[in-house]
Image (cartoon, rainbow, N blue to C red; front, side, top):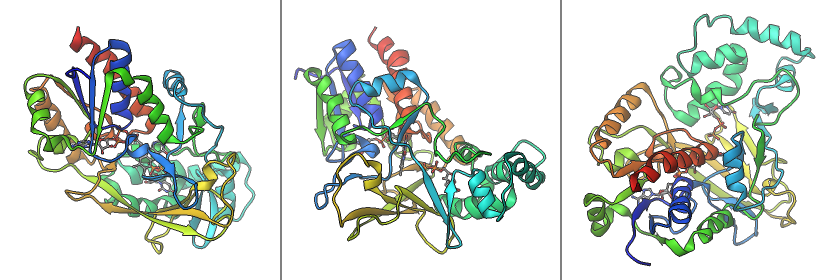
Length: 383
Ligand code: FAD
Ligand code: UDP
């Protein structure tokens, strides 16, 4: 490949989307550097060597969106299955359906309320919040009342974020619907599914579509390559999808991130828990959830007598850990403002994606943000 026209740091959804567009639509030469040994970022999946079961290496990834352009875009690279996500939660030794719905409410209060009666009960229990919720705790109580909040949200959230709920943004649980019927689909979106042959092949297809103008180097950390950094310094367009605080060497201090530890186990049984995701709402189990991957692809003939599970432990991020979740407290957002201000001094460096924008993006939002950046910033840069 001739000398490249653009450097993209990170081969996750954001980086690969911009790379594919730049190569296929602008016919520019794209160099993508990725420090891991695979493409796809946190959404990557591959078949487990022992069992052949498709495992999402960095935790369960279910694709869902109501954004038609994004849905059309992802369908260019793979067919999607008609998987519908349903999650259950263990509280005090009993299994309840999530998100909170009429089934959860009736089981929890040992009753048989109609939708209207359940609405009235929750409204009564949510009455203590009289103003617009300013944090996760107030948001939770105003949505579902204190008893359900304390059972299903309070301790799970404490394990996941280890940050006082009054410091957490209400947006974190705005994403969870509350329903007064028995619908327990986890997502409300128009489109939902999983790439038929796994995310690994999905990302491979993305890259193949652009292969004449795309050079991907795996196992390469941008910060350790003086030549690349010099190209950026000399003005080459650089799209950075790693953590923005790391890019500026933590000049204004580190942003708060959550990391995760995944504990894998191959269990000798056909079916470990009967569903893909089981949450653990209480503090007595130190993990937040257990993922059982074979349930993501019921259409496949999966291995009998063996199943792969991941226990997910949330942990405080320290330098050297993988940043997975942006915590986004008010202090973090102030720091982010400073980093964003500083980035204006470097107009040839664009920050994108969950780490680059410090945003709690699902996959569809990451695709959306990348498509927007391509249109609004990358195309004008070359013009
Ligand atoms: P990433 O996937 O993080 O990619 C960034 C890439 O940059 C990484 O591969 C990293 O190695 C690389 N990189 C960083 N720094 C450097 C460097 N210095 N040099 C070279 N390479 C570098 N979304 C959903 O829609 N549905 C879900 O069910 C869902 N579940 C999730 C579960 C978990 C546990 C997590 C953490 C996220 C989940 N998401 C889910 C969100 C989804 O993972 C993200 O929206 C998406 O992967 C973000 O893509 P990205 O390209 O912004 O970042
Ligand atoms: N949540 C909770 N209990 C649950 C599931 C979710 O309290 O059983 C809260 C928790 O704060 C979590 C947030 O809702 O971080 C978003 O959960 P979701 O499963 O949508 O997030 P993910 O971890 O998959 O990004």
